[in-house]
Amino acid sequence: MELDVTVLTEQLDTLWMLVAAVLVFFMQAGFAMVEAGFTRAKNASNIIMKNLMDFAIGSFLFFVVGYGMMYGKDIAGLIGGSQFIMPSDAPVAILFQTVFCATAATIVSGAMAERTKFVSYVIYSAVISAIIYPIAGHWLWGGGWLYQLGMIDFAGSTLVHSVGGWAALVGAAMLGPRIGKYKADGTPNAIPGHNITIGALGVFILWFGWFGFNPGSTLALDVSIGHIAMTTNLSAALGAITVMTISWVKYGKPDVSMTLNGALGGLVAITAGCASVSMWGAIAIGVIAGFVIVFGVEFVERKLKIDDPVGAISVHGLCGVAGTLSVGLFATAEVGELTGMGQINGLFYGGGFGQLAVQAIGVVSYMAWTLATAFILFKIIKSTIGLRVSKEEEIMGLDLGEHGTEGYADFVLKM
Image (cartoon, rainbow, N blue to C red; front, side):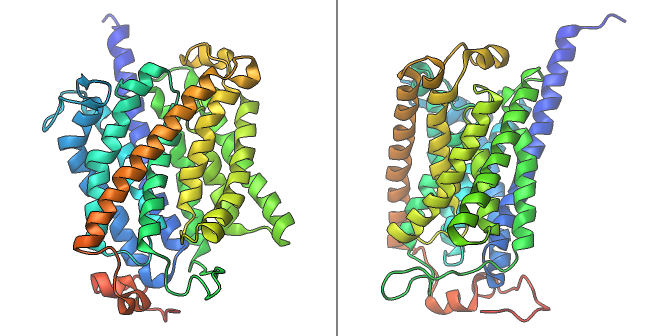
């Protein structure tokens, strides 16, 4: 029997995309564990329910509407106009893009944790999955105007993570801080999470899943996945090392939860350039992400007075921006030739400011789009059904208030 190399290659590519999609899907469990561990026990069931339903609802709406907006026939470089209701692309491609959409939607959950109405969460998660993310996605991955401009965001530092981060910023600001977060003079109070072990498990799951997130974005089983996996890992490692070091010097002790976020920040930051930068470029990006985490968290909490229980705005929004801009600094033609990203050199490799300028245009465009659409969305929800639970529900906990159940029924909870 003669071996058909073309058919075998297609089958291996399909298998690789399916494996990568499953890895990225498992990241949903990681997000749930991080958010649950970094918040209080009385809200654990609510957090699990949110992370379950944003994937379930997003899967359906992205299939019916979102995929067509993102990958349908291009209309003026702004939106897709075909493949609605029953997309004609390969099912594994639709699944792979679905799990990315779910990532963007679930980022918002952490920043708005412990005080958001569940019905309001369901609505805004649905709109992000069906409209906000897919239209943004078409601009780059769907062949739209940012793709034509030459922006590089290989697996979504900005397109996935910053879009989620900017939506989280608007939602958390409009929602207001948790009861007791700020003193009368405006200084913040620490509200510790109930289970740092669960939070750490979530981070390890996310780190594991990122080996599907970034290498899987090749959409094919080729030699570049090894390089992409290594840059991904190095950036995460240096993000954690950098945050541990800074927090140790700054606070006198290495901060556990912030160091965990350092690893996530490194993962987010390398996602744009994992196929364009060298190993040492990835190390530099991880270090940059570490600084962004420490000082970004403080800026959001102390200067903007926005209560973000899990640090989602800094991890996903700010590190996404830093990572996307870093492509314009650290991209190297040698790596681009290996991975198929083109012979593009960043500023530090003699390429001038051209690619950095393109990256900046993309960052600002996605920020403007998400801030504007998220503001409209959250404003409508707040003005109609409301965003926030009652004071009594917040104090009691959303497990009982929103779902009539407890995440830890056999335990005495600290309120």
